[in-house]
Image (cartoon, helix red, strand yellow):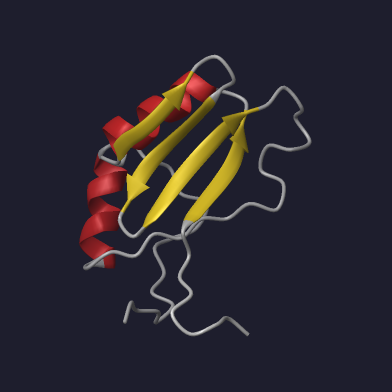
Amino acid sequence: MAADGLKLGYVNVFVSNFDACCTFFTESLGLTLNQHEDSFGYASFNAGTISFGIAKTDDPSLVGSHTGVGFIVDDIDATYKDLVAKGVEFEMPATNIGLSLP
């Protein structure tokens, strides 16, 4: 059980196409770039109350392995339609799972 006041601070995932992912998160999703380190392939983005980071890897077994990201939005249907219009492809349709921030 999480301690009182404990909130998610960051999420990091491994990617093989680092530059394309940086472009996707800034241009398609509109996240603000906080840090970009080409020397070791790491970038972080402001994703509201958390920092979302990507780390470049040459190990294909790490990419997509046990990773998942959920974003909280005000209007899931409008956001989904907007992102689809921008060319974002989803693994599943937009789903409201009933979570909210305090």
